Length: 357
Image (cartoon, rainbow, N blue to C red; front, top):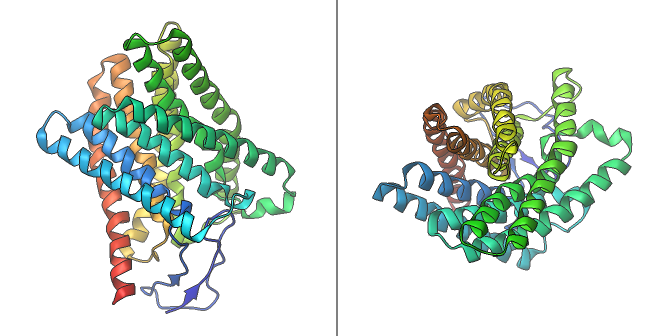
């Protein structure tokens, strides 16, 4: 089988194989070592743990499943940290900041799962503080990099470029949860206001920076000026993460009128926008799955976390309006989320078994 080597952290579009191969034959790839390049696995597993607890946690089986996924996410985070300590890969340089953005979002996703699944708000706050600092540093540094990037370099732009700009929106959702808890627990009003303000800044920053980039990428793909290789087709799901996480964040941060009504209206618009995003991503991704034509790589996990954010966002829309329709849609998407997680997780298990065999 062919060996294809490409940037493991997906800042630039990987080269396609130049020689013909049989339709059912998959290329093998040089994968990055344990480290931030795999942080989407933490993001997806933590998000799944959170929403399983929210939707099905009233039943013992649902609670136990949520706890299991939470500790899988925690184990993955430990594996990623240990891998970076050992391999020092990737470096904290602009072309690899998407991987570091995923690390920040993984920590922030774990913060929310920690309080929802286990009720450990002290650990939620710790994860939130660490993830927030990393998310803002990565986002601001990468934004500066994009501003000064030569125009010719944009010919290789793809959805992974948006990851550093998207990271603060995960902080926004986590901050909204934490600020509400501080208030409900009778904590410091000043601290609650500060956490809330940081969340609002994160949400607004993402809307101003990430949305234009994503629109430009869709435009380039539509005009066939950009192309995403089949092995990386799962990154079409990345924009859905903005839809879901921004919706959840808006509901959590818009805790008083008129902001609550504005947040709900924003969520409705975002969810409507999410419909074509899902259709496009599914139409690109699922045929490749059924053909079994994708070589295993870190982007397999790109289809997990975005769905998790939408399921979470639908729950927040239900909390804001009392409309059970949102929960009904959320339950359906939760089943799809589990299917995506199993595909990514057991794809990795199969890859490891094949390498050892």
